[in-house]
Structures are given as C-alpha cells and as structure tokens.
Image 1 (cartoon, rainbow, N blue to C red):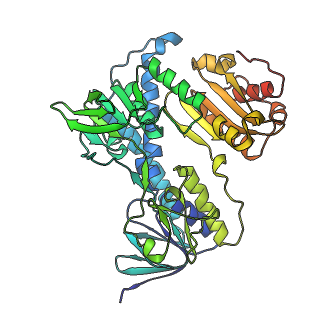
Image 2 (cartoon, rainbow, N blue to C red):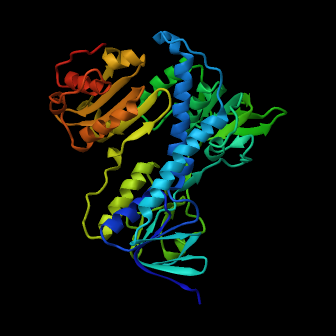
Image 3 (cartoon, helix red, strand yellow):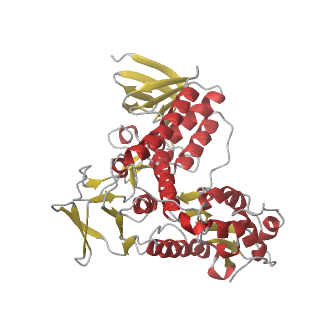
Length: 461
C-alpha cells in the first residue's frame, strides 16, 4: 500500500505557466493545492523558452546597435560576442525570476511536490509511491521540442532550442529547420552575433501562421539582413560532414553548416502519464477539452500547451487562472483564442491579435472585410529608431476591427492596446478619438485608426 500524500481541493500536474498560475489563483480563492513537477517551477517558458531566448535577442539587438551606431553619429566598434558573458546575463535573468516565483509559491495553501507524477485514478496523482488525491485535477504537463522522423538530435551538431540556449560559442554557420516563431528568433540572434544562417521551411512562407503581408515584410527584412531562407521545400535528410552537417531538401538541393537547429514546433507531453488509462481523450497526443477546459472525465481539467491551440506561455497562464476560478464556482468568461496576443521577437518584431485578412474573409465573406496598412514611414519615433514596417488593421464592414497585425522594431510593446481593441470589439471611430502620446510608436496604432475612421493625417501611401 502506497503512503498517502494527502487530499486537496486541486491537484495540479505540471508547474509551468499554466500550472503555477492555477495554483496561485486557487490559493487566493482559499483552495488547497498540491503542485507537482519533476523539474523546476516555471517550466519551459522560464527556464528553456521565452525568458532565456528573449535575453539572447536583447543581446543580439545590442550587437546590431553597436555595429550600426555610426548612422546615429555614435562611433563604436563591435569587438566581438562573449558567449560566456551573454550566457551569464541570460542565466542571471532566469535565476532572479525563478527565485521570485519560488517565493510566491511558498504559501500555506500550496504544497509543492518534486517528482514525476502519474494519473492513477480520476482524482489521484501518484509521485514516488505517494498518492495525492484532488477533488479536482488539472493536467498542465506542457510540451517538448519535436523532431522529424529519421532526424536524430545529438545535442552537438543537430540541436533543439534547449541545446541552442546552452551553446558556449557563436556557430560560424547554422541551418534552422523551421521558419515559425522559434526558428526565426534563433536565426535572428545568430545572424546578429555574426553567424551565416539559412532557414529551411516546408510551408510557402516564413511565420506562416501570421497574416500574409507580415510574412512578406519579414522575408524582405531578412533578405536585407542577408539571412538566407528557402520556403516551400520540405526537409528530406541530414548527414554529418567533416565540419558539421549537410541538409537535403525536396528537389535534392543541399545546404551545409556547422550546426542544424530543429525548430519544427513543440509536441504535447502526455505520453506514459496515465491520461488515456483514466479515460482522457487524446488526439495526436493533445488533451481534448470543451471550451471551459474540462476533459469530460470526472473533475479533470487541462491547460497550456497540451490543449490544442496556440502554444504560448501567456495562454497557459490565463487558462490556469480560468480553471482555478471555474473550480471555485466563479464561472469566468470563456477565453477567446483569437484574442490572445502573439509576438515573435525577431528583428523585425512581429505582433498580432485577432484574425488574419484571409481568416476574416473566410469567416465574414470577402465583400464584408476591408483592410488598412499604415506604414511606419509616417511615424516620428519609427524614423528616430530607423525602423521600417507597418500596422495592418482588418475590419468588418460597419463593424469592429477583428485583426491587428504589426511588424517593425518594438511592435510587441504595442500589442497590449491591440488586444484591448480586439477583445472589446472597438470600432475605428472609437479608437480614433483616443489620444496617443507623441512621439511614440504607439501613435502608429492611433494613426491607423484615424485613417480607418476616414480622417487620415500622417498616412503615407
């Protein structure tokens, strides 16, 4: 007989963004929680994802600014990239946030359990022979870096993002397999650090989940930065060479480099955890839920990357809060997946919320949808920063704006207002009457809405 671990209002399996947010909100609502994870609190996002990659991207931005400083009248030389120093900075950021999270989770209502958990009944998770029973269970086991059939990741020449974050040198050349968010971010970093980079993408364009106009702008910017990319050609094989790797794509074309990064997306971590045995429905490894994130089995919910949809830390975070409130009987409003902001932190940055032009036309009919592109050429702060790009608005005729798509330096910082516009179903005239501070890039949003409301001012064709 296994030793009892105790009974709780909620047992949460996984302490990443979704799991720890659920634990914190549940504790606020006076519910007792067992939070179980085999690794560190904070999950992929904090330790192997969003935070460390964005630290690298900031270092990359500084490298570019130093290299190009003369155009601003500042004379500086980029002596080189000290990867030990970059990694120390990156790890310092992660360490401080990790310490803060550990402090937040030290609460009477939350019992932290370190170890590999498995769902052994509809209300019980077992860890190292101890059983933790929950009146409710939240599955929040996150995701892992996918590979492709026949593509062996060795951690030295063929890497995942986890390996890439630990590199102690700047590679002389790199092949990035996958032109989605992770792929273009690493390509952007390595190019800024001085590597020769080629992206291979099977789909017809880079950042293919974004609006087509955004993809074109990213591709144009990458050509200018001399980041090579080949789209619309599926990967066939990779071989080791004397100096690195050789990748072959459809049609027999080959590319050689020192390393290859596999950035073909992330798979759900659900194998061997007892989910299916307890009746939870899986589809290609993902946990199927209803719109209220309930699995249809007992009192079992699921949040984060294991639930089909956008694999974003802030989505998991919000879902964790939602489920804690649902369990507490607060009946929170269902999360609109299209209303979740998306940011790609490459140079240029991409930020979007809502529907692409193509999706909006599909949903509302092509004759009911119009778009407006506001070029950053008319924005004073963008001129100061010497950035190029645009804000694209997608609206329904006589209705709200249903999509905001932005590309250019620091666009991620504008997505907060963009998500309010989308989620509050704002009409162009309503946003046009708001005052946007000058000179900021935020004005670009204001100017785009002025134009859409029929009163364009700094609009450049």
